[in-house]
Image 1 (cartoon, helix red, strand yellow):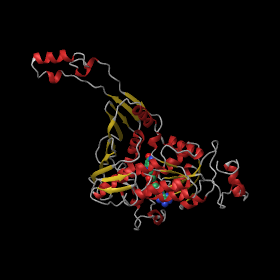
Image 2 (cartoon, helix red, strand yellow):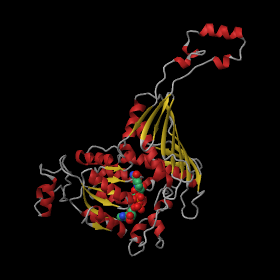
Image 3 (tube, protein in one colour):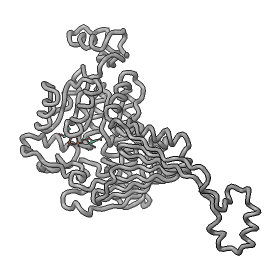
Image 4 (cartoon, helix red, strand yellow):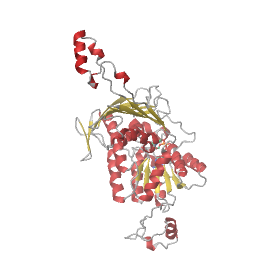
Length: 454
Ligand SMILES: NC(=O)c1ccc[n+]([C@@H]2O[C@H](COP(=O)([O-])OP(=O)(O)OC[C@H]3O[C@@H](n4cnc5c(N)ncnc54)[C@H](O)[C@@H]3O)[C@@H](O)[C@H]2O)c1
């Protein structure tokens, strides 16, 4: 608790409301920020109440939080919010959410181009922030969010709920135990070959400038006339979304960064194109990237075209086995070295073969036909029982109360955001890009790159 006396947050807010909160005023006259105590419910405002914002809102309620207000730019989404929780106050101006003193934290689930501007305003207004992935629309925004979070002391949790999945933690346990040896290579894949996977979401019949605040939606994006697709299918355009990297790589790379204890890649080189979903997008529908992390390599294959029932896969490939993570499970595939010289020795004449066997009969690395008799480690499979979002929100609530860092804090979110933006910038600039983690600078092998791009 940051208040000067040990009063409850609710009591404090009541005093503010009745004008008797003098004891709670911070130096300079600004109202002190009072955090919920361990026994209190966290009160949230939802900003961006579309598909994910509504799912998150339901997760907040399931996690025991209050939802005090919701903000969205489309009437239909605000009406739906009030079906989920009747009488929820709603607005199209997020600043009204930030002005509410009873709101401890905001959950931001807008299109990507609004994440950072709203998160920064929210932190400056004293709110903690749960921000959907990818943390930002560009690298400079990610660095700015880190800075503001440190300056304001606000907690930020980024919403790649895979970090709170049971399967991720099982995989980490296996990797940390050394069971798969040293990891030099990681393969990530994401397949979403149908129209919904390719973000061709349906447009509601009432979509119009009367039901949508189009000017506010454009925000820092180039001005243009109303176009419903650019609102409901925003991921298909760089102006509002971050393509396959920001939408999907981020889930995969969050698991990579968490299990491997790294923040940034050293370099990325990407290839891709629009092969199938032509005419309605400027982001690629196949986007493949090779990352160099120094001690290991990561390849990410992003595919909105091919009909392979793979979903999301991350394979941590060690020299003694592989850990495979999917959205639902973790698998340990150990392998045991098998030295069997029988095959090459079969090309030798008998006398040389026997001479070799006699000389190496006690050498386990020169096995000549008994390797298969040695005990083998068994494959293990773990199926998770929960999806992860409620756990991720509970982790955030615990941090809001304790003021400790959450599992996917702003530094972690910055790292995965930078990695995703590197894939996009490499694709768009057609060159390998290098990240200098000391100077927080991106350069290209052919020269400077435009970091304002997603
Ligand atoms: N963690 C996950 O698994 C997961 C899943 C889906 C989406 N997401 C993320 O959630 C975000 C939203 O995705 P979605 O599928 O819900 O999109 P959506 O289009 O359904 O919803 C986005 C909403 O943001 C609102 N919005 C945009 N700018 C706003 C502003 N300035 N103020 C208030 N509201 C604003 C729009 O009105 C829209 O309703 C994206 O960043 C996406 O990457 C995360």
